[in-house]
Length: 498
Ligand code: AMP
Ligand code: ZN
View 1 (cartoon, rainbow, N blue to C red):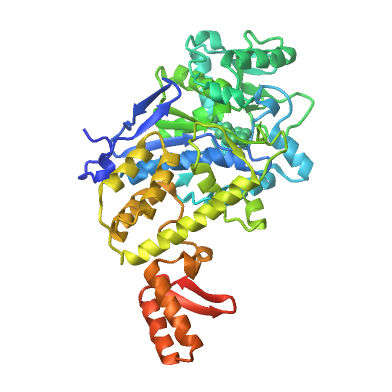
View 2 (view 1 turned 30 degrees about the vertical axis):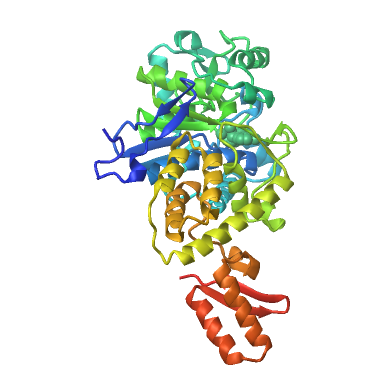
């Protein structure tokens, strides 16, 4: 049965969708838990500093999933949490709190700091054509009661123990601990991701040194106690005294509170697989007694010169850096879409500039096709093909290559090409149906032959002083959707938006 909607499905909606599930390490056909509705949860940023373009890769990836499901007729409920408490340096259970450190370093209150970087984050998502209006961005600090309740439930069921500095999850009570694996060889080569065993060993070294009361290195804090002689900027009363939640807890608690006991898709970067997501599984599944995520999906890293972009390495670039160089932010989206989400991708300014040029050409090509199609589209097999590529585990590189092939094919009509653009754009999100102002300017050599010859004829008439004829030709061009402007360097054409 059709999984998404009881309404009569369109051709797009009938094409099955496949996602690679990190849990099973297999590409699986997507079926949402409830027909017509899909729930997606994405681990959001820790808002103690600006969100860099490496993080943005993780959110464009989540956006592609949401767009794919939405374009197939599904109502998507999407959550990206905002971590504004509890994330300690190094993802382990000790060290300084990143938010507290940030607030002190910038001389701001915690609220001012997290508010500033949350707003910038959401603005940057918008610049990459991610529609943020239907996304919920809950803050961890808004769900403290739910987190405390979850620790109590775990405590009641015997999954916790107490040490001198907090309440810990006892991984020996959850035999499936660590079941989420699936880091590929290629990802391992990028350096940052290691096997689960390596991660546990590394973390063990760090953690055991800090907390000798822990029974097993993989055990993790659910609730940390405030120290008796120091007042923290963020702390809450609880049954166990003043303290704050462990970082992993917020996702489990917010998923349950906002999206329910079972969600369809959970995403994050591959760095979340070994610890954070295994800990989410341990918490949620111990409370619920059953799996809570149908499809676990993870995006590979964006690197610079072979090194992961990361806040702690301070090698970050930001979406705002692009406009300073005159590069449209969507060029970055195009750059990301050229690589599959599960492949590592290396950023360079040269590669981004090449993407910017390619996207401008694509915009202009689309603009001329949209005009020539006179608003009509004729579906063909090409439309089905591009959807099949996109539905195959978000096959954006293949879909972009195929799009170029179709749009350049002289044997395909503008109306048929328009149908392909209309099918692909809701998923690609490259503004191919609403060409940005800057790309609506053409030199005449970028135009279809028929338009080029009208421009040449008009130019001849104008130079010969035949102004009436030149004006008639200008009107003809306008009727075809082009406005001519005479510039010293030659005629410049602008698409007239309809
Ligand atoms: P964080 O604020 O560190 O928790 O990161 C927020 C999200 O960005 C997580 O899903 C990370 O996995 C992801 N992320 C961080 N750095 C990169 C990177 N260089 N490339 C891709 N994703 C990243
Ligand atoms: Zn999470």
